[in-house]
Amino acid sequence: MLKINNLHTYYGLGHILQGVDMKIDTGSIGVLIGRNGVGKSTTIKSVIGLAEPAQGNITLFDNELVGKKPHNIAKAGVAYVPEGRLIFPDLTVIENIKVANHKPDSSWSISRLLKLFPSLKARETNKGSQLSGGEQQMLAIARALIMDPKLILLDEPSQGLAPLVVKELAKVIKILKETGVTIFLVEQNLKLATAVADHVFVMVKGKIVYHNPVNDFLKEEDKIKKKYLTL
Amino acid sequence: MLGAYIGYTVAIYTGSFFLALIIAPILVACFGIVFEKLLLSPLYKRQDGGAYLMVTFGLAVILAEAIKLTWGADPKGVQIPEMLRGIVIVFDFPFPKYRVFLIIIGVLMALSAWLFLEKTRIGLLIRAVSQNPQMVNALGTNVVFIRNLVFAIGCGLAGMGGVLAAPMVTAFLGMGSSVIIDAFVIVIIGGMGSFLGSIIGSLLVAFVLVFGAYYVPDLALAIIYLLMLIILIVRPGGLLGKEE
Ligand SMILES: Nc1ncnc2c1ncn2[C@@H]1O[C@H](COP(=O)(O)OP(=O)(O)OP(=O)(O)O)[C@@H](O)[C@H]1O
Ligand SMILES: [Mg+2]
Image (cartoon, rainbow over all chains, first blue to last red; front, top):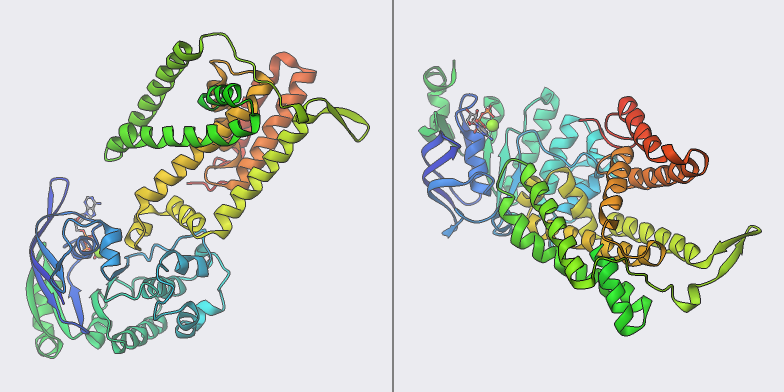
């Protein structure tokens, strides 16, 4: 469903993505891993349109996304859960969700979301800035779900979370997968990544240097780690 | 200022102050949108904020000259409508009816602005955009549209202010700039981005101006800036603003 083809993205003169190729099947979870600063977030931002690729294609069900504005990409069915969550700090939990609520007939109603995230239900009227990191992460996911997306972009959701919360996060990601939504996950936490992934992509300096189904990856995990992931 | 002059013209042609109060803000809002689309939006890609200031300032100068050419340089008095002339007795004090009218309008406008921001979907999006425009954009809202809307509403309100002020101060060429300085001080004192802050700021500034003008007429303006200075030292973000 999501195809990224020979993608090049620059920040000023910095040639960050140097020909990225990826493919994530409908209803599956593709995980992108790689060291700090290799361009994982830039890849995600290129999909949602916050970074403008200079060359290459990104297609969602054969619908070209490159050149479209972020709000039109969102309307095409892509929901973005950014690195660092980026909750609106002065809006309440409910208001944060409502910002993304464009369809009244979303299959994810606010009450259904609050059932999935009981920790948010208890804090309904709290401001975004008053939430813990874990609660903010769940809120960022809830905010994405209300858009009824076909594809969810999750950028390092486990960052800064306690192990117990990471476990809960893994559960949530699996529940999402059961609903049939496709997930593009960027994750440094390999345990979480391999627990949920169908397919693993490894990025080095703006290029995909390795990709395989998760079972094959697990067989050669140590080798890949040594070769591409340790400093 | 444009609002005051357009209001003056509409009032002259239609003979109705209240019609002017409705038509002038709409015209000023339209003018604002055209100005924003034509001159400001090409600058959004630039990093330096100075460009906006220059263009806006340049436009203010052009506008002042255009007004001079159209309406002449002498101040234009606008008649207070019949039903708002005279005085009312408030707590045993005589008080001009028009001022009471202004106070009521002011409270009503502040209240409706607050309701609009807090209770409507567009208001919610405006608040979200002020916190993180990129994120609002990525969540499916056209931020440019929201910005244009806010700009138009702002211009419309300024136009309304101009019409309302015209009977009190007459429409004159410098009226825009004196308001801008007051508005600037109010926003700084109240705190950027805080609605309640700007209301408190405006009450505070008005209070100081009036009392200052009564007791130490020469220093009233200086006291305002002193107030701003003290508040900025104690709370760099303004009374209700956030510190960066
Ligand atoms: N807005 C920006 N302007 C200029 N350079 C940027 C910008 N954002 C990122 N970069 C640079 O682009 C490169 C890739 O950044 P990116 O955020 O995509 O990395 P990442 O793989 O997500 O890293 P991390 O694991 O730390 O999140 C980095 O070298 C970074 O310094
Ligand atoms: Mg990143």
